[in-house]
Image (cartoon, rainbow over all chains, first blue to last red; front, side):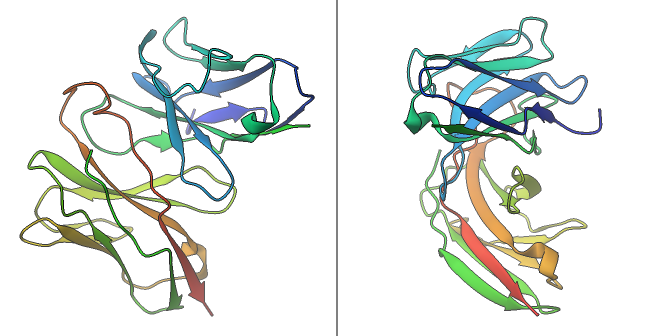
Length: 114
Length: 116
């Protein structure tokens, strides 16, 4: 597609519920990133994929967070047993590689845990 | 990656040039300066990046001082649609060079308000 697509756009989850957030990167983009953005803050790095390989997951805040990209294209960020502090906008970005240039971000999924 | 310092907010009159400063005094020789902006309810948008030479594209110009310790993003004729948070980021480019070299480290940025 023309850009990075994320779904759903908004998600309300009850505390303790599991959620799955989807990212469709630009076709052919090798690198894929997930970021978390709390209200009033800049985005914070969660994890990075190069094709299907998850090369860095150091930003995932707990073992309740899990990301996958099994075929090197679509990626899913899963949060188990959601808590109120998980409420944030989750952003996905992709790029052809990591050799500089810009990353293309999606519009994000706004997760609200009630 | 080197840390950046930006003013928290700025105002600019519509039609005038917006000059957004960024300090990155600890920048390394192989680190580029990147600028992104984030319009309300959207993801960050890439604007421009540079190493040491001034750069210009259809969106903006980037002026980097000779010692590379600071830079300025210039929007030559600001419009209301340029109202956004602008992030200055420094990072290594040109290939993988260790853990974290590919990720973008955002600060709080500068909230630019373009006023009619």
